[in-house]
Image 1 (cartoon, rainbow, N blue to C red):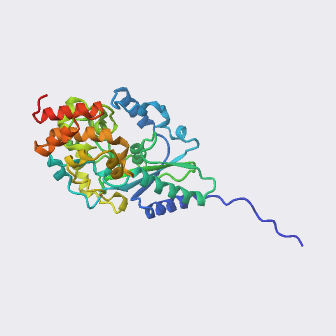
Image 2: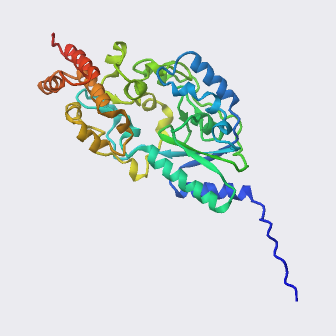
Length: 364
């Protein structure tokens, strides 16, 4: 008796069903929104090349060296035909009010995205878990996960995927969630259905609050950011001394700047994060400048291991805090702190301390 021969041809993939399931998995993994887009970023490429030609990237040479890999996903990851774009809220519910910290010259202000665990680690882990779930369903799946970690046009992809629109400050805005969120991507080789999105409406209207509030006037025109003037660039990306023209305007901001988000009307609708990893660590939402300046290299490492702040290193941390101490109200504690680092081994720190002492009225 002959046995029936089994049909070994794999069943066709139901990409529509897989797309719906991917959204469910993303929600279970803590993402608040997900969209899928194709890889055509021709318009974004034009804007990027113009931005680079104007020199607005400053010392961030990596913005230019990757060529078109940033705007052509299949050149960065061969075989990419779709990008899954995801969003995760980060605003900690237990963080002290930002305006109170900014108005207190003795307090160190740290951008709210950096108060908890390093978002690169958190999102990368979740994205990898999501990719693994897709792989378990479709053997031929191939992909790569990103979160601010490679030449990827995150905002442009998120906009195309329907997660929001680019605001005049150049960040992504969402009508229901404002801008207090991280973005992550998965480049994939599967032709999942693209999220149906017409050209996203821009709801900034005539509002220019983000442009007006910027302490260093880094938003030189709507949707145009000169990174060389941006406090996030100056305190995080810039190596060496911070230009004199920006030092007073930086105030007590020692890591990043949130002013453009703080005044944005759409952030009235922002929701706090339910993610424990983004809860405030070490009291960084209201720590004093003097305390920050006292931390030695070992203490810096202990407090910031697993934090986005760790990558700037102890020397750059001291440079930033020294600058803020120069802008702080004069007190014995401030003067003693600055004097304690006047002979620091780093020329950059010594120069910054000297400037700050001069600001406090000490003449060498």
